[in-house]
Image 1: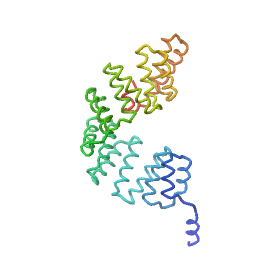
Image 2: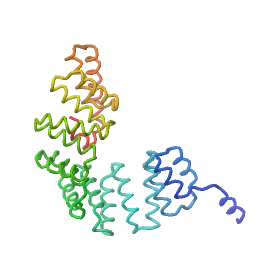
Image 3: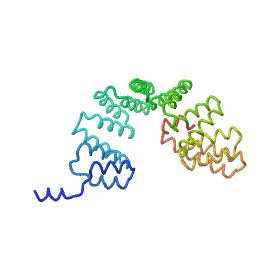
Image 4: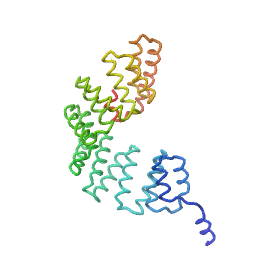
Length: 295
């Protein structure tokens, strides 16, 4: 028995610090290696960190099991409850996520993060009034919460309250002017108000802040097309499609620009691709935040 324990102790095991470092670096191979070295009875902290690692690798079920084990060992740990809620939220199980966040709220009723995440889970469940209520509570606890302001703007768009959305987006940008998503959504909203020049300026700013977002290039392409700048529109739309080949709205607009530029074969191919993507989208709903600006 003693020899067996000594043999087990000699096996290289993952440490919390090593696993955390791998996760922070988004090093999948390193995370895999550290998870394979987990000891038979990890500490609650190591289990919670392992859950983050599993989530990074897309192994959602193992992530949930790990954080659940951490909570079995330490049931009143606020951080573990929040992580459990995040994992359920990102796995699409919003009722379970809400349950976790409500338990966390009992431990820390003055935490703005709890109510923000509750708002996100209700938002993903399309319960917009309950989402807005929790975002407002988060703002009450932390008036500088730009994320809550932004999400209230998104909820307003889904409720077709464009004026309300504008006010929320402006406040979010005031609080965090360097956020590309805020600039993009605000620019798209200005486009809906037919304020084309202001919209173009804001979306260009979003592109400068984050040139990797395909939605930004799609909307730049659409604006350039409305101005008759077809070459610029084609360039931006092709960039959007290269960044996200499944972005059907950009593919459709690109087909239109090809046709208007006399490139009929390219237009035909793009339209056929759009029809394929449209059929596939019926089985895989779009992210509701992206959907607010993707059409």
